[in-house]
Structures are given as structure tokens and as C-alpha cells.
Image 1 (cartoon, rainbow, N blue to C red):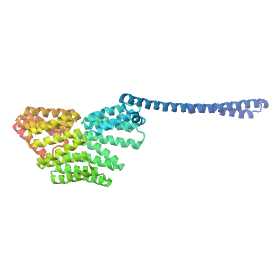
Image 2 (image 1 turned 30 degrees about the vertical axis):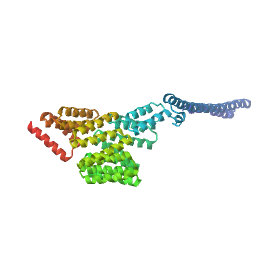
Image 3 (image 1 turned 180 degrees about the vertical axis):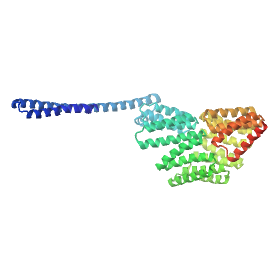
Image 4 (image 1 turned 90 degrees about the horizontal axis):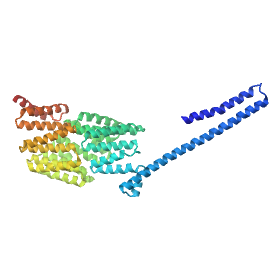
Length: 483
């Protein structure tokens, strides 16, 4: 703006001079010689003005070149400084550092963060991603990516509040991106992730709201892969809510998407999801049929991690069919594959599954041994929700062997954790378990307090199916009559 004003003001001088010279030429009272002198002076002024404009433009061009040069120098110096930091502090090879691009410090820590994330080392991932945010030259696009990964890390260790904080920060950064298409897509991605936060907290109504918002965007952009993933999340909620037929309809759409794109892993995962739905419905034959379809595909793809997950599902189906020895055998296969992929969280969850099978078989010492293995590993992963679950399972063992004080301690510990991370389903289960513990000890007043709290939560979130709800209400009725 300053350049434009200066240019116009400079241009006014020759224009004014030209007007004066023309006017002078027309005035008759001024002698011809005087006219020539005045016009000559005006022409001279005009030449001086033009020269001034040309020189000033050259000056501005030089200033522009200088600013550009300074910016390039500053960027170069920043890159040089970053490379020097990495070389001095990390002891990395120069060729490796030079291949890290324009922001080597950012790229180095981001690569490490991704490496830890893929190896399920979320605490280490969080540390590296935070270092990325401290790099001054980080772009908006990179901020979105890093905040999303930070959210994912906290999500995977069940720190829901922190996960949501970073997802919302990703949305703020995404909205500031000039490219509207990129901006809207990043906002939609982060919105779905916030849905995941509400899902792990057991707030399924809120989770569905965010999932459907993301789903609408990706349907409009015809991003089939994203549509399939979001529909899968929705199916998990529908299973919990007992809306099995609706879940199966969604799985059909997911399956058709993956078949059309030739995504074999996606097809296998969908069969596994369908299997889980049939298992929840109590149709164990169809559950096993779809589980086997998933295994047949995964055997060809050599995806050990997915195969381990499906084996875990198969173990639970066999457990429901009361085929406990087969269930243990498959659960141990699942455990072995998770050990090969170094997935600490799922290794711990496998020990928990094996412990649950021993618990049902009333082999309580073995059950406690497996739960303890799970608990110790989970402390390494800091997965709070899974820790809460295994502590609750320990409480079940102590309850069944008549160690009520130890059972109460475990249930209370599980309740405290669930309340700390706002895990609604965990709060419901802990209240239900404590209530039942007091009930079998005939402490009905205390039992009623916890049962009513569990009933209030269930009325809002519908964790119990109709049959389970009827049995639960009947027990509350019995206690009220005793009072």
C-alpha cells in the first residue's frame, strides 16, 4: 500500500507539470521567450520526475530481492541449525540428516513418533510428537497431523480427556488451512476421532453423533475406505445396544465396499465383525462360520496381527460354546502371534482372556496367575481401561472363593479408575459388582445403594439387554421387599 501511494504521489508531479506547460502555452499575455523558458523548465521537471520514478522502482525491486534473499537465508540458516542440533545431540550420520528435508528436527522426531506408535509404545510416541510441536517452523498441516497422532496415543492408553483435547486442537488448526478441501477433510477426520473418545468412555449417543457427522462428509466425497471404517465403528455401538440386525445391515455395506476395492484385509476384518455380532446374538454357529472365513483370508495375506485378533474372537466363541479346552488352545495361539508382533497391549489382553476361561472353569489359582500377568504388562502400556477390566476380573475370582474383603478392594479400585477416566460402562459394572457382593453377604441396604446407581446408569446407556435388565430389576425388587 505504501509503495502504491508513493508511486501515485510521484506521478502527480509530471502530470501537474504537463498541465501547467499546456496552460502557459495558451496564455497570450506572456511573451514567447518567457513561454519557452517556462515550458522548458516544465519539460525538465517532467524528465526529472520520470527518472525519479524509474530509480525508485529499481530501489523497491532491490529491496524486494534483498527481503527474499534474507528470507531464503533465514530458512537456510534454520535448516542448517536443525541439522547441527541433530548431529551434535543425536549423533546421527550426516547423509541421514540431509535426507530429512527442509525441517530435519521435525521430520526426525515425527519419524520416531510414528515408529513408536506402530510398535504400540504410546508413551514414547507422545514424547516424540510433543518435540515436533516445539519446532518453530512447523506448518499448520503438520500441526494437524501431530495433534491427531497425539490424540491417537492418548486414546490408545485410555486417557480420553487428553485425547479429546488434542483432536480439538487438530480441528482448530485444520480450520485455519487455506486450502478449503484439505481443511474440511482434516476437520472430518478429527471429528471421527472425537467420536472414538466418546466410544471408549461408553457415551455411545455422543459417539454416534460425531461418527454420523464424519460419515456424511466422507459419503459426499465418495471416500469409500473412510465410510467403511466409520460404519464399522457404528456397528460396534449397535452390537452393544443390542441392535444386531441394524449392525448386520451395515456390515453388508462395509463388505460390499471392501469387495469392490479388493481390500482382502478389510474383507477379513468385516467377517470377523459379523462373527462378533452373531456371537452377541447367541448364534454361535454363524459366528464360527464367519470367523473361519476371516481366518481363511488372513492365512493367505500373512497378516499375523489381524490373525491374532480373529483367533481371540474364535477363543471367545468357543468359550461361549463351553468348549473350554479348545478355547484355551486358540487363545494361546492368539497370544503367540501377538508376542511375534510385539503388541504388548494385546499380549496383556490375551492373558486376560485366558484367565477368564480358567475363571469359568473354576480353576481360580490359574485364573489369578493369568490376570496378574495381564496386570503387570498393562502397567507398562498405561492402558487404564484395560487395567480397570483386569482388576474387576480379579475381584470376581476373590468373590467366588469367598475372599470378600479382597474382592471389595478390587471392585472399589476398578470403580475409582473408571470414575477417573469417566468410563461409563466401567462405572456401571463396578457398581453392579459391588452391589452383588453386598447382596450375597446379605448387606441389603448397601447392596441397594450400588444397584440403584447401576440401574440409573443403565437406564441412560442401555448396557443390559432386556433379559438381563429383567433379572436385575427382579433382584432390586427382592431387596426392597426385604427392607
